Structure formats: structure tokens, C-alpha cells
Amino acid sequence: MTGLTGRVTGKVGAGLVGEVLLHVPERQGSEAFLAYLAVPGDPLPTGTQVVVVEYQPPRTVYVSPI
Image 1 (spheres, rainbow, N blue to C red):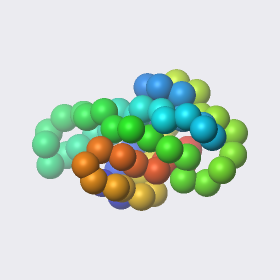
Image 2: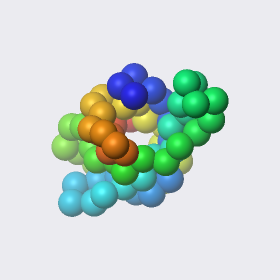
Image 3: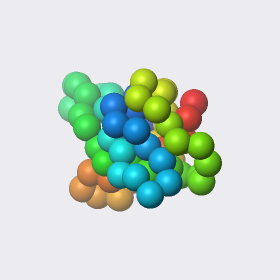
């Protein structure tokens, strides 16, 4: 999952569990994941393009804006 890109579908920020929709080529589609900020900073609003920095199975990712 690390390196995949997607977009925020539920605000990601400090103290929040957000949601991102990632394109997963191996599964030929997009899937929703719980998301946290990879680096503390400003919240990421809905629609922000992100990249996965870290993946914790089964469905948690840490993201940064592109």
C-alpha cells in the first residue's frame, strides 16, 4: 500500500480518524481506508490528493498531501 495515491473522503487531522479512497491496482479498483496524518500539520480537507507513507494492516494508512 505504501506509495499508492488517492483522495481524502473524510477529513484527516490531529485527533481525527479520517478516511481516504485509494486506487489499488492489484484489486482493479478503489478501496476506503482509515487515515491518519503521517506528519503533524494542518488538517487535510475532503478532496485533497494524498500519498500513503505507511500502511498498518488491515485497513489503516498514514498519509501526506501530494
